[in-house]
Length: 123
Image (cartoon, rainbow, N blue to C red; front, side, top):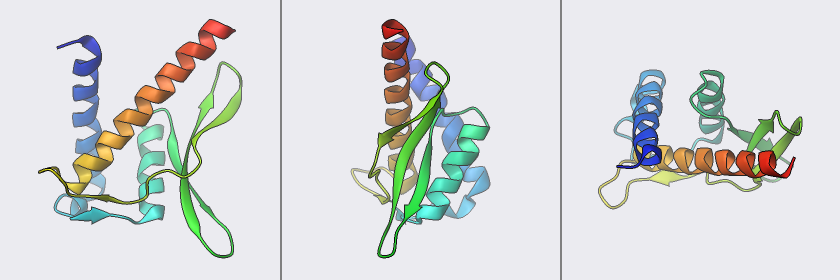
């Protein structure tokens, strides 16, 4: 197993354990689709240092959505990684809703690291 896969596996466990502690009712949920709760838990995960981004809740007169953003110390700006982030996580292929949610979080975390590495090289 490569270091990155091992790190992802360890991070996946830490994130999942934290979420289940804070949102125990999500353990058996068939779907996770509450934008404010999703945003809140990612802010908590970011504050705990488990991820470097959050899903920010956005709304206008007719709709709500989530966007993925993070603060880059390298360029001293907030970067929007995904303007229209997933806001619905459900069970599929034997995975629970929480597993699909954590999978997406790990994917975004890897994207943040990749972008930060590119920013570092270009500066």
